[in-house]
Structure formats: structure tokens, C-alpha cells
Image (cartoon, rainbow, N blue to C red; front, side, top):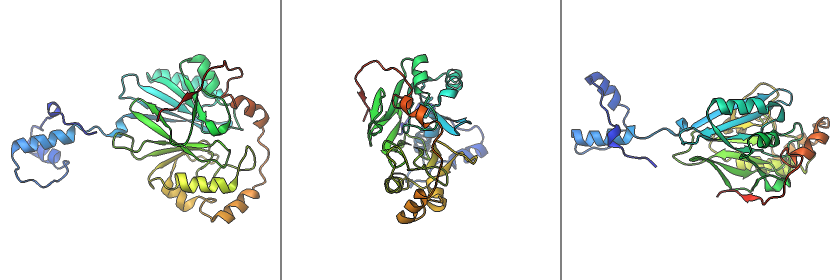
Length: 302
């Protein structure tokens, strides 16, 4: 909501500066161009706070598994609530140190899916910051403090992420998308896990994967987002850090093909068995905690 706050109004001291200032005001039909009307219009414009200023965003990297971890926080909220997406056990100390340095309050440790190539950092984070809640999709058949479903919204301060079901790499893959609204960051951001990588996608040959399902997921849940939506995947192996929906629709080497060709590509990747899967999967099914005390699972905010 745009707020009108006349107390924040200030005029430049010189005529030339005033012209530059007033030229930034959207042109609207005016019948009365009196000073009072101009003052009201200027106040309306300058009271608006661009939503980009609310979001603190950091992209972090773990080199052994080429995993990206994402830190997001609402820095205009008094508590500066923050969340981590896809934390890795090996870099928890780095991530928590950054949270402390930035004066943030970490409230969520979230996973896009049950990872097979590294151990999630969610469990270690919960032992060091007990108030942090772990989050994963209900469809993943794993344990966490909060199990989410498609359409659920995860709030941190006045900002939120929307969960979109994007199975295919695994049964429980979700994509977290920043909110759609005037008070939410622009352009939107999509944290796609392994469902959509930059110019590629995750494999579909284990953990209930399905090439047909992945194709439909990406095309219906990600490629339908605005073209300027920023794509932030869980991994990259070539040094890319970010893409957009528009770029991937045009240039993704797999998902630009028709569904039949895509399935053929995925069936013939001949990738080696993930070297950490036997160790990582059992731990990640409990969001990184070896032992969980019995407690009710909370429902996500809607």
C-alpha cells in the first residue's frame, strides 16, 4: 500500500534543482496547478519506498558440491527476520557468522528438496540456533518443523515466499518464488532447486524422478512467471550465478525442446551414481537431524 505522508515533503532550494526534482514525478492530468496541489503530489510520490530496499539478499557458494545457499531478510522490519534456502553442513559456520554480522534474526532453514549430493545444514543450524524452524515440502516424505504444500506462503517480516510444486527431479521438489505485490521485491526471484538449472535441469533417474513430470513442472510453474523473473538454482557447475525466465525459455539446452525430445535427452544422460547419496539421503530425510524429538508438525502460513 502506498502511504501519503506530508511530513516527509521537502523542496529543493534552487529552481534548477526543483525542475530536476519535479521531472521525476509521474505526469498526470492537472486542472489546478497550484502549489498546494503540487505539494500533495510530491508528497505522494516521495513517501513511496521502493520494495527493493526491503530485501537483503546474499548468494553463497559451497564449492565441493557446487551448491548455492541463499540468504534473504526483511531489513525494514524491526527484527530483521531472515531465512536460508538450501544450507550445506560444511558452510553453516560461515552462514551463521554472516547472519550475526548483518544483525539479522534467522527464523527459517529451508530446503527445495531432499538433496542427494550433500548433507543439508538445517540440522546443525537448529542445534546452534534452537528457535530456527526447518522447512521442506510435505511431498518429500521427510521430517521437518514445517511441511509445506503448493500455494503456501512463508513469511519473513512483511515479505514472503510462495511455494510452487515442481516435482520431476524428485517427488518433493518445490520452487520458492518471491511474492507478487506492490510491497514485494521487483523483479521477482525464483529459487528453483534442481528443477531448473541455468541452461539445464536436474537429473530424473532416481528418488522418484520423472522426465515427463519435470517437463510439465517447469513449463507450468516456472516458465509462466514474468520473463524478467530472476532464476537462482541450487547448483551450477560452469560458473553461472543467475539467469531469467526469459533467457531459459529461449536458451535452455533441454527444456526448449518438445516433451518427447526432452525425455529422450534425459533417458540418455548416462550420469554416474551420486557419490554421496547413500550417506546424504538418510540424514536429509530428517532435514539434517540424526535424532528428532517427537513433536507436532506445524502448518505453513497461508
